[in-house]
Image (cartoon, rainbow, N blue to C red; front, side, top):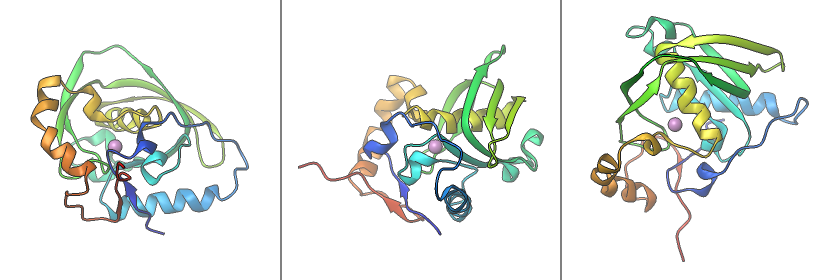
Length: 187
Ligand code: NI
């Protein structure tokens, strides 16, 4: 099922998500729906808050980035309760986008060396050192689980410059090519 994507301004994107427990009902279907939603909207990652669920669940398929970033080739992963440890390395600035911020792309500074610990669909534990753009995608998606978005990492000046675009998203005046859920109207 192609689910609507919750857009910037919706409070669900600003909440800290809850850990997932093994045996959670409907989880397999939810994961399948999240992949379908991500592919239909041409994203490379999707976090559960973006489909309106405050649970610690992320799907990633970084394959489309494989041409520019070899570390992304064939990397499809379901992350349950992921934890990131930032490893050494100077921050790198690269453009990021987000399905919850249609039409926007901004440079974001991130360290691209991390150690990721997560549970897969079967609740099997994994730990892996990840680098480059894949590490960036993982950090971007895991930010969503903390109620954060990439624009929280940009400078106040940049944020000022995109203020009109942000308020267009909040007020539902933005163009979005996939099913979307806008922020509730303020009374
Ligand atoms: Ni995002």
